[in-house]
Image: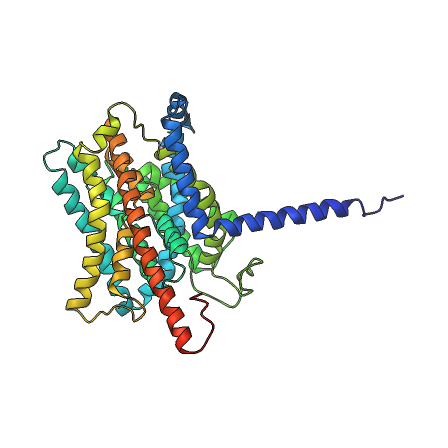
Length: 437
């Protein structure tokens, strides 16, 4: 006699509960505040581990080699975090850039002028500040690009936490600026920090990218084709000598981003029940993995700055960490705000009606939080000088910390201003003064 199906019901219910739990965790990890919080927590863990009695184990884990020698894949765990895991972070950034180009602020040239120019000035001015402060140091030239980057995840997380009453246009300004900033950082990494090129591997990477592009244009979204092809692109780019994170951005930009009524999978539960583009679907799946695993692992591997002995004193006496910290805190704020103000002053570009210049000043300070990409560039710039690498990372942490603290104070003041403004407007209209949602 065939046993009844009832005993399987509890298992199916348990499996469904597990799916719901996983979906809830993924949804939480897509929240900007959670991603930023994880970044901070794991960076602190790396810092504490590197300065604990178990410091030797930290170095052992970082320097453990994993992978085959074939195609130069015998990498340390720290290199796997920087080269492979961050490729997912930049893939998501590439998708965000594509969205901005197609439907966001960058799709409207007039609206894009201010944040784009601000982003460019926010990269050029920190370089000038860095070179001025580090002038005369024998190894100064290697790290000129370290203070050029803004950590998009952390910056948006801070804005979400402390700026609940701020205009939505301010977040759009910061997001557009940070996406352009990420693109600039990738170009710098690809051009300035590529020591030698393997022409054959680079040619193979180019051919594979063309094949991936064709699949996207033909709307062939099979995971059995696209995932192995994407992995092959990463391997070829890595073997070519170009930093492997470039592969992530290239794939993100090539993913099909337009909406179509047919042929695409329906949205997951919790999203709008409308067909999504392949790019949005990939971003939806990878964002929790990037925010919940890739970036935290990179943070714990990269933020372990030893501050014992003479290192702590060197952070405020050595030109390299001071130049990086000054570039992030002073250079980014002056560059971003100055670029926006001068563009509005001498061109037809205008600041959004929702914003005031004090808002731009506050968010300009927030762009000095470099962290993820700045730590990555530090490792590329000072890879042959471990002592300077440690100091450079200390400079990144110092500049990012000061920028974040000052930005929080300024943004809180602007948040209270808008809250009081909404209360005053509500009282004038005779409505309950509940503040701004």
